[in-house]
Image 1 (cartoon, rainbow, N blue to C red):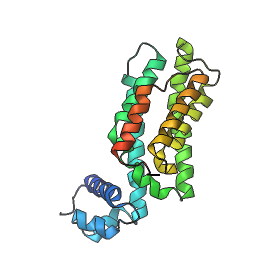
Image 2: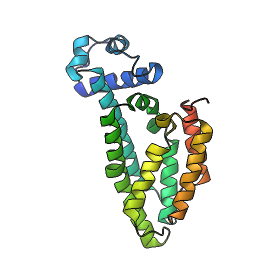
Image 3: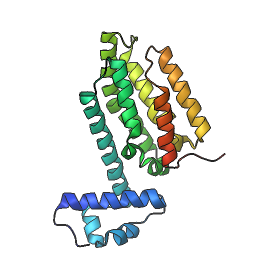
Length: 218
C-alpha cells in the first residue's frame, strides 16, 4: 500500500489495522513489524505518526473513548421517552447493543497492570461519563421518575460499577459471576431510588460480552 498523502486517512488506516491485530493476536504479541507488514507501508510512514506501539495503543483507546462519548451525547439529545427514567433505560440499552463500544475490551485487558491506564480510566468514568449521566438523573428528579438527593454522586457510583466493577475482562470473571454482579447493580440502583437497570439490559450486556468471547472458564 502506498503511503496516503492525506495524514488523517493514513492515521485511520494505521489505527484500524492495529486494532484488528491487537484483538486477533493480543497487544503483547503484536509487533510494530506485524502492523507494517499488514499495512504494506514503510517503517518511516508508521513512525512519522507514532513513535511506538504504546503510542498506537493510546490512540486506539482514545478513539474508542471519543466514539463512546459522542455516541452518548447523541443518544441524550435524540432519545425520546415518557420520562427521564425510561429515557435512561433506552440509552443504556442502545449502548449495550453497540459492538464498537465493546470491541476493544480484550485489548484493555493487557493494560490492567499499568497504573496510569487504570487511573485514567477511573478519572474518565467519573469526570466524563458520570457528568453526562448526572444531568439525566437531575432531570429525572425534576420529573419525578427518579428519587434521590444525590444525583451527581449516584451517577458516579453507577458509572464506576457499570464500567469498571461489572467488566469481566478487568477481573477475569466467568459468565455466572458477571451476571450476579449485574443483578446486584440492578438491586443497588433500585435501593438508591432509580430503577434503571432492566432485565433486558442485563441480558444484552451478557450477550455482548459473550459475542467477543471474554468470559473466563473456571
